[in-house]
Length: 399
Image (tube, rainbow, N blue to C red; front, side):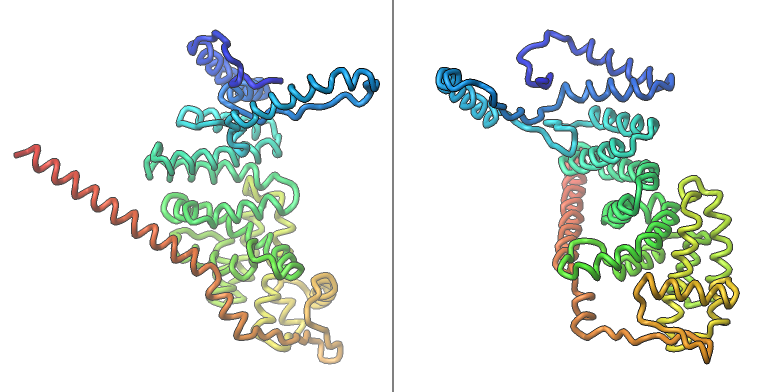
């Protein structure tokens, strides 16, 4: 099907297109989200320019037909290649839109809303990416003011909760963590939406072990997430956010205060919080399991030998249940630990990081962070010059 934007003339006045958009909005307000979604898809196709399909040859033609049509087929292929070279293909991440403005951004928001309401999570993921790229492109071209861009990013993070917490597996949570830890979105969390720290903290705890396994399996891949960096960035974000709840306080007790008794109390409060939270209620059992592993890792990191009775108290479990749980954990997670049945304790192996690894960890992404700092300073200086110029013009106008 040829895209509408590549059709030479349609003779459709803009008023009709605007009426079509209003009808889509009317269907959305009436609760017919599937019809609204389909209409918005058609509306976006008016401004899209997808690549032309490749020409397909006829495989069942006779030899005589091939000889007769070979010259015409070559001319047709050459014409299609010329059209592809002249065609301006749109951005694939934004439904092949050739350009974007604030009005089309509202259409993309509507598409995202419809995909969420019809529970099409794959389509919602694509729509979320389209909204994100459109916001960044409008902000880069100064079509959105810094304050409006901050507002749009804040809304995007709120809408992403519906998508990421309903996407199957841990991939959705990993992509959410990457999004939230991006500098611009992290700024939105600390300044406008500190309550999102709850979901960021929960997502980090749920994906931490998976990320650690992936980093162990592929040491050469330094572009993805890293479990140590995740916790460090999370703690730094917690220190800049004026927000607290049992989930955040649980991590604070373990990683900052090393208060295991306080962490045990907060973990009990987390269970009630998780069961009543709209996004986290389905993850209650998994979160409690990952939280216990987190307690076990931190407690064993500062102790060479751990008494099973004491560890059971820290994990809110009896001694026998704690022993079975630790055996399963050691077997499944390949931990460097063993259980001494005579002394009734867990003996941890030593895992000392080399100086080289510590230096690499501290200097990773140093060039990127330095470049970001220089860019921020340049933006501040430019704003200062513009402000001085505005004041000078205002002074001249008053004279």
